[in-house]
Length: 141
Picture 1 (tube, helix red, strand yellow):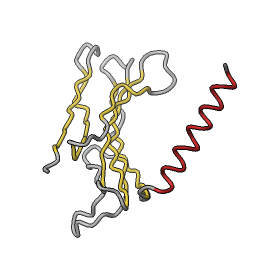
Picture 2 (cartoon, rainbow, N blue to C red; picture 1 turned 180 degrees about the vertical axis):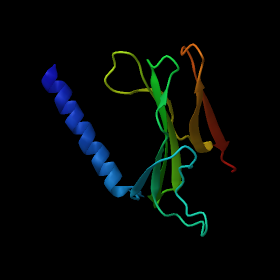
Picture 3 (cartoon, rainbow, N blue to C red; picture 1 turned 90 degrees about the horizontal axis):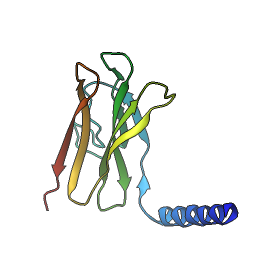
Picture 4 (cartoon, rainbow, N blue to C red; picture 1 turned 45 degrees about the horizontal axis):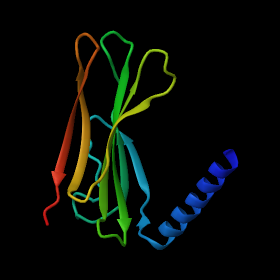
């Protein structure tokens, strides 16, 4: 079974590589850590497509100190695609005994959504709940 899985994975990688080689070209990514920045593919002054951006929010610690969370908002710019910029929002958490953060929520781009962004508001006083704000902006057709 292990050999079959590897062969299928290898075939999948080749198919994806060939499909992407002929498709739109992803533009370089800029990574920043900020509490307020918005992930965007466009220069605000000229409104020109400049590239991809990943905005990582700082880690928020729960009141009891046992849990941590952070959000990532990624704007991916493409040349030659129908959509030049697509946004993905991710929320990561880490609990007691966990060595790495794990993905807790993912809002992927969709045909009808132009923009996705997630921001952490705060932990509940008892550290049981995490409040996050998700912003979705619809495409206008």
